[in-house]
Length: 104
Image 1: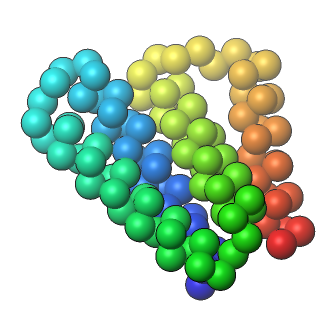
Image 2: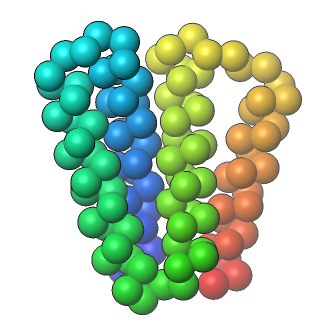
């Protein structure tokens, strides 16, 4: 269950970064509220997961989900670069995150 909560924390992290990007571009109150709520829920879920998971693994997985998710959202919805080397780096981050889960 702690791993599922950690994954949820990572998804909220990804949503928070997406809302931050939206707020940076349009300064709408809804984007600001979405950002604050997403990051708050992310930290709460991370704290719950860290009660039973190692801090180093939890933090690495949490940031990995946020990083990979943010990069993919940027490529899909914000026309960010989709070059092969960038995608390969994302795959390495994803593989490392999965590896940490398998070794814990």
